[in-house]
Amino acid sequence: MNLGRYISRSAKYFAGQPAMIFEGKKISYEELDKRTNRLARGFYALGMEKGDRVAIQAWNRPEIAETEVACYKAGMVRIPINARLSPAETFGILHDAEVKTVIADRQHLEPLLDNRQSLQMVRNFVALDGTLAGAGSFEHILSDNRDEGLDVEVGLEDLAVLTYSSGTTGKLKGIMQSYGNRMAMIRKALMFPEVRIRPGDTIIHVGPITHVSGMLLMPFFFTGGCNLILNRFDLDQLLETIQRERVNYTMVVPAMINFLLAYPKATQYKFDSLKGIFYGAAPIAPARVRQAIDLFGPILIQGYGMSETTS
Image (tube, rainbow, N blue to C red; front, side):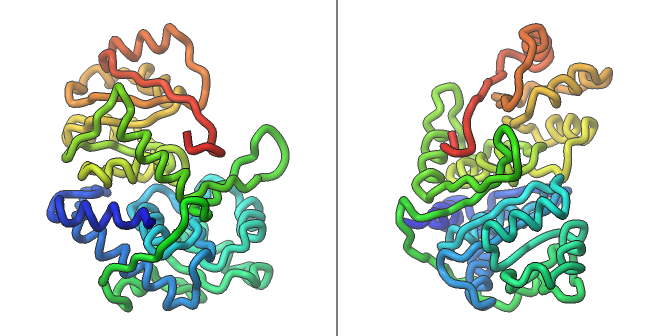
């Protein structure tokens, strides 16, 4: 099996439709399929092998999703790293996960390059923002490789993602998610009784797509939906984009709901396009839920799960 096939399938059915939107730029399904083919081939051109580890750290941007898909196609293990972690925490993850290739934006890559002598296991540093001394370029990797499909067979029990969590105490710990885990997560999202994702539906990502929000990328790719990505959580940008792009879904945490409810301008926007607001990861007062229903309608969907089970 190979989860990258889902992208190639969608590229056939929804070739010209937007798979992602970021800062006004649309990336079609055909473009997504070709770019991820090139990136997957690029990993092998960098000397990597099936099962090797690829880490990515950046604020929300399409390349995070492209790296996920390319890792699936190449049969490699993805290590998503939260952009808010300190350099020391990032160093710990890279060592613990035995990462071979690091992809990052300038903010997160520069500290790694400044201390690369302590990262001997990392063979390749890849810059998302143009070029940096001592690092390759993400876009150069794409331009240097063919866009023919790459389909590496993997098993359901093979490791797909290694994500890090502090748990309750102590240093960050690696959580293993298999390809079977990720497939089950996609299937579960598509069979969710209160939600039916349809071709053309749009979800706006405001939380880190290196974490829970990113788990909805693949279900929307599978169905021909659109993943609209915001670089960070910004109230005006979120509300304006929901109204302008006729967004159907989003995933938030209770703190974001509280910010929205306290924002005086929130009532000036239209939310009639929204079909569902997923929320979880922290407690929320029943009174706040009632206020949110008054603002958005009865479309709140509470979730509870564990990174260990992708549920």
